[in-house]
Image 1 (cartoon, one colour):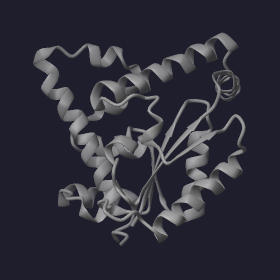
Image 2 (tube, rainbow, N blue to C red):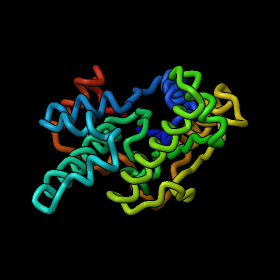
Image 3 (cartoon, one colour):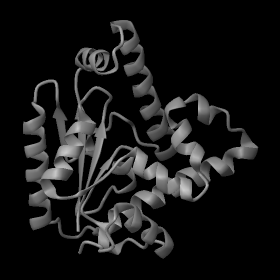
Image 4 (spheres, one colour):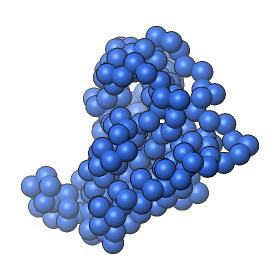
Amino acid sequence: MSAITISREIGSQGDEIAAQVALALGHHLVDRRFIGSILSQYGLVEFDQEYQTLPGFWQRFDAQREQRRDQMVAMLNQVIQAVARHGNVVIVGRSGYVVLAGFADVLHVRLQAPQAVRIARVAVSQGLSAAQAEDAVQTSDLVRATFVEDFYDVSWEAIHAFDLIINTGQIAPQRAVAWICDAARDLKRAPELGRPTLGTLSVDPVLGAAVAEALHCERVHA
């Protein structure tokens, strides 16, 4: 089994590249909608609804509500692990690269681009003015950095967390897809010795079954 995590900046074409990688490899694509649907089955609808309002959403939690916040993040971690344990998945965002750090059969990818490039792309894709697109990019960057740094104590800029970093301002999407696929195939052929694999993950059977059902795939990929 194997997994690929795709961490991406807004405007880096990360979602499109992740989808193409999943298609090329015959992997399941797991994005925020998929993860949100699983979390909602456990009564955590507000996570997917409110994630994009960070950091304001998390700052609204006081000491009495801290337990609820920690429960939400812990459940997110369990869902990501259950998805990875299923195998042959491309996990987009949601701090997958942190949750699955250290596993030999997981490829961690960061897709990024210069801010000016990202602003221009967001303006076109969302029909925004340059000023609006710049605000959207800055807000998205703050949201993602705040979540990773506050809950996992990992810097959003930490390059050592990734196996492959691609600047999509320079590298065409088709080339990025090819590089990621090649790296994933190499990883499956020769996983690093001395590191745990996804097969060692212990996943709640009920959660594992929910993930398999949502993926429309009952077979755990060995």
